[in-house]
Image (cartoon, rainbow, N blue to C red; front, side, top):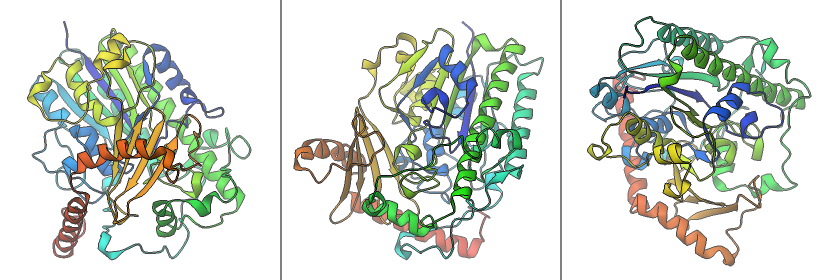
Amino acid sequence: MNKPNFLIIMSDEHSAQYSSVYGHPIIKTPNMDKMAKKGATFTNNVCNSPLCVPSRASFMTGQYVSNNEVWDNTKPMPSDKITWPYILRNNGYEAVLSGKMHLIGVDNLHGFERNLSYDPHIDEPLPHYSWEEGITKASKPWNHINEAREGTSPMIEADNKIEKESISFLSDKNRNKNPFALCVGFIAPHFPFIVPEKYFNEYFPDNIIMPDPPPGHLNQLSNHSKRLREMFGLDYNWNEIQIRKSIAAYYGLCTFLDEKIGNLINALKENNLFDNTIIIYTSDHGDMLGEHGLWRKMSFYDQSVRVPLQIIGPKFISGQVDKPVSNLDLFPTILDAANIDLDQYEYDGQSLINVLTTGNEDSLDDYVISEYFAHGTENPIGMVQKNEWKLIYEHDKNPKVELFNLNKDPHEYNNLSPNPEYHKIIKELSGKLINLWGDPEKLRKKIIYDQNSRKIIRKFAGTGNFF
């Protein structure tokens, strides 16, 4: 049997719920709809950290952030860390990247042979934060709301080039000679909230859903959510037109992205590659888009942490998989699909091949974990989801806990943790997180030491020279 090819598409900041296939009543994503008819759609897939660099490091290594120690957006992944592109190449594959993977530092490939286009998000180093410095209040509102509009931007141009170079790769007449893994990293629908006119006008001004939290909800937000609002200037009262423009542009970027997904799949078909190619679509995290008074990511609310996962492949099922899974499951899934012995490697995820071939969800773990150790907090924070239950846990002398029943409260407005009736499920889910972390205070001190060390290195090596 021929080894399967892989087309792996990872977008940036695409919440699962902002697509028609995941139930959005307005946003048009027809190519994701087509994928759902031909393959598996995982309805409860989460990223393993709601932030670009650590989320992508987990995807590449199959390890939780607390294990691979890529804590935040200024932490480079060590070049000796094994990744699925390295392993595929060791087994006869050509593994190439086209676009973003946000692999900062001196090594921007981590196993990929080359980048067919470029990653615009590594051009400018990001700010470095230390928990010991505390939370700094933003001096002005977050700028991307007031900049929302129709038009083009360097990120739109980047995605057009990423698409072009990816299709060129798939169209090479020699592409059938050796198995390949093409990983395409689009920027959309990540801000800036700027999208070409035809996509913008599809939704602006009235074809959107405005945030509508219950009265008093913003006053009851968790400490973490309040810190994010304060630190990033998200607590500003923008005028309604600008909010509508921002949401319409994001919706438009989702449709813009979906069009590119369809074009890549069509290129597989046109070059007789489709029948022997496994197609995976996911995203690194979502965007809050004004819900719960938040924008951007960095949160464990559904808009930020639940991301699409669709997989098409030879002899794979079509239909929904409802049990929770996460992006670190893709490391063993890709290797398993390539008939590579998983026992050779250390990873935290689970292969999804059994459920993809049989449809039997009983083989899957019954919980998932996501972690956050970056800016906007002062302590390790984690999320555990099991069936209808979602726990958010912030380490402290007196740990801060939120508990939501996603079946009864899908919008996550009603924190059940103060109710003693739910003590048992809180203890069970928090125990899974503590079991992963070990001593949370030691973990906190380890992260702070790393943050402070990088601060000194940046001071003398220069911003951007290493990270």
